[in-house]
Length: 80
Image (tube, rainbow, N blue to C red; front, side, top):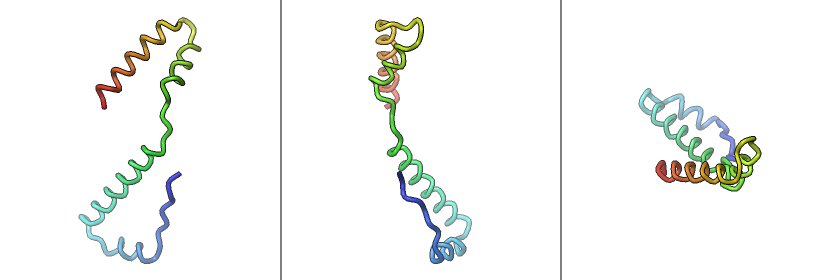
């Protein structure tokens, strides 16, 4: 889990002195840092887990699940 931001007195005074552009830059950096940290911390669904979930769906057998897995793998590879 990411560390929680604590607004101390020093940071409060720095923020209070910021003009519009400084505040915009600060918030953009803060947002991107939080976004990237959340992206790193998130647990991704593993291929084996997805295959097991697909096999629990009525009407999807091993062959169809494999076709779906190939399509998903191809889409993820294209997206990067």
